[in-house]
Image (cartoon, rainbow, N blue to C red; front, side, top):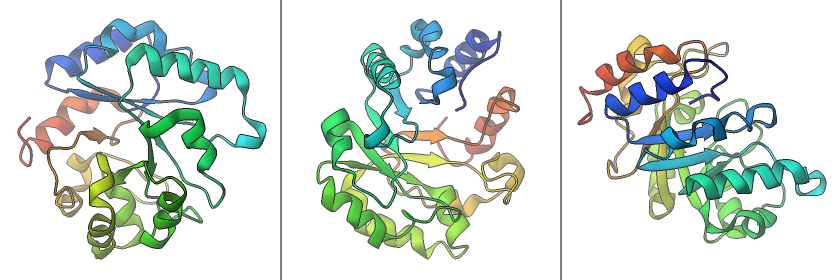
Length: 222
């Protein structure tokens, strides 16, 4: 879910709650982190609240951004914090954010984080971290989806949440499954007790959430 810089944000959030959405992810980028606190009363009505961290480097961390992040984490009692792993030192993340952090498997455009070998390196440094399983990213790396089975077999005990969306190519890496009909990625979601975050929607098409939910109702009890 994208950051909400729009006057109808409360209506959209309330509509999602009324449609049966119980989980929400706050996508954090420095320029909009101040937008989210305006909607805390609605955000805290979602049962599961998670944050997608911006890319942070220990060497040049922004103290003001970090302070705002910690404040937001506390205000929504965020259950998990997803980060994009880089081929670098990860241990400082555990010191900064604790055991809530979750490494996400990466898409085909990244230079690290797609394979079980890459993620093993991350988890060797962060033994208490969780895993955010992005099934769209598997499709971008391996149309056969065998990679998804390999990741699940290796890291299922660490699994805390899924990211789900359709793949529309380089210019549309995350889009609606209602459009792409890529049902095969939905079938990678083997543990349906875990929260599922829909990343199908951005600020330009957020109003289509009900259409996407209606499509996914064929696969999940929504």
